[in-house]
Image (tube, rainbow over all chains, first blue to last red; front, side, top):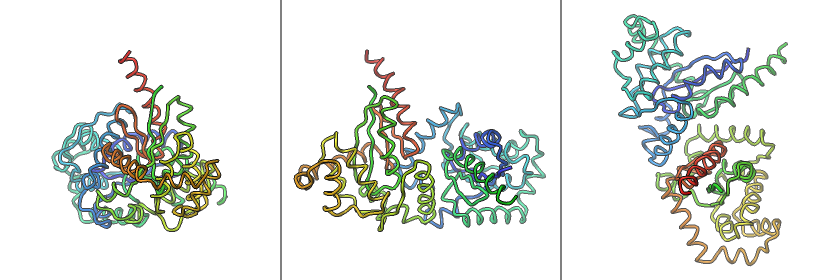
Length: 206
Length: 206
């Protein structure tokens, strides 16, 4: 089965529609999907940015919000801007990483729905605990696990891998043969690539 | 008939596949298209950039070239990087603007084909003159017209209008109701919008 990795950042606006769409697209195309939460902060800092480029460059920011409004409108997704934008996403990323693989997608969607669907802050442990409870995970043990040094180190390592892969932003889809597809609008192309080239690679090995 | 404006910059890499596709898409969807060459330099300078963001931010640049390679591959368009990138595009933009509306698309495609298809520099009057001759326009009078103060002022005004519209980059499609669609990958969406909302606006006026 072809494989792809979905790289997302909870503060990233375009990661919201991507997270809502990505699982159905992977299933349609028969691609096995791994969810990879990471942090954009270190990537941005490496480019000299201390804030979201959508705040640093107002024309880009105005365009992004309108573009996102059209995208969410077409998908039937509610859109309410969180204040402030970007939200502090460190804790949400740690919680997402601490979860089992099977629970990570539902939790991640719940975070995005709260943040960009309802415009709610996502940095409080109580908020994230309530979202865990919603998806049937006991909040206290998971929040404790998220705060462990090993989990913090795992998120750092995952972010370092994102940088080593050369991800230019979030969301991204990456394939086993090293291709990067950046943006909610590249998901279909990324899955098509994974399918076409995953199959070709399989034949070469056989 | 619904209308749209196609905003492009000769130094812009993603404007190359967009320029090659845009006319057929407009025709398919029954949208009247105006070609609007402009300069990104003043937009970038307003954001504090003295070079292409694809050079300033290496991860973005590496991604863009690979992405463009995939896009051109899928479209059957040759791709050879001009050196240096970005090319000096001022003279090409002046020439494009000095042309009649009917000749502007063919000249613009010829410039992109030379620049990104063949990797040739596009800043020399002799090069642009040869491209004019290719499309059946006498080079000398047109190059003279391009150098006139009125034409230089018209390009400044067109670039000022791009900034006033809030274009975040190039290429863009803009519609009569003020929507912006940024990127080669947004052309279809932009034309669909122009068609859907152009028609709706027409009904309201009727």
